[in-house]
Image (tube, rainbow, N blue to C red; front, side, top):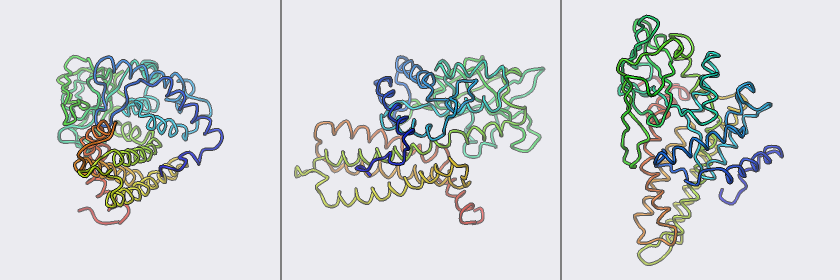
Length: 398
């Protein structure tokens, strides 16, 4: 893996595009690197740099390239180029597009009125607006349709009351995409409506959640009588479930960048083994048991990469099976955790590191603290296992 050309499948046009993207990132990306365990801006200055960087990616035509040309998309855009962009951002360890902003753009294009598109899409492309998602609740995470936040009609407005949680970047966000229950008398899905919410609305309170990593990526958001007018409804009243599920299916090809991340993590693991010194002064990588562990991990990472890459290949030709996404996500998140655990075992056995090794070890600590979140966000591993058991093995629901 580490010695092969990762771009061997690129045709001439895609190879040229990859080189163009790589050069753009090298020239323009903020100097602060993206940390898996510390994934939010550390201060207002870094937040400003991230907004500027996202705006630059849109302005250059790399982000939003698949949008209609009337809204800034590229003529003749190919989805494979979205994947190339994400791969190169991973390789450069640069700040990556915020999932919730990509999601908002897709939802607005698919369901927004012309007025909403004019109001919000240019602000996404400029980096002026960061969006967050107001979906999950204390009692509704994986089973989102069970949410209880209410948006009750009052005249020509809706009055929203409820609590959301695990809202990424809410403290930095200008706008939120909200899912709330407008009709409690219908079935769980039909009574839901999507709204766009200014995050400075009266009655809206944001409380960051301090994580074990020391960062505050997630927030609780409390809505206490927040008033939203008809222009804040995204799509049709009662059709919020379609808005959300459509958005969740967007940017699916980006999952392929996860394969690059696993590759980079394995390279970091090998470098950690080269740097770590054991009690006898021997480099950890010279030990037979460490070499065996690395070889075993290489086989596991390679098989997981193949699962992810197969999924992307089917996505790009619209032949995706319903189980592809859950399988790829489960395999990726579980392998991520295993890489982190292997790294920490190696660190715990080391008595010292060569130059640069300590910084690498610190990064592994941050990755490890973040890793468990991956087994929950985007579909909890337990839920995905149950889903795969029913879809692939045709087992009854437990």
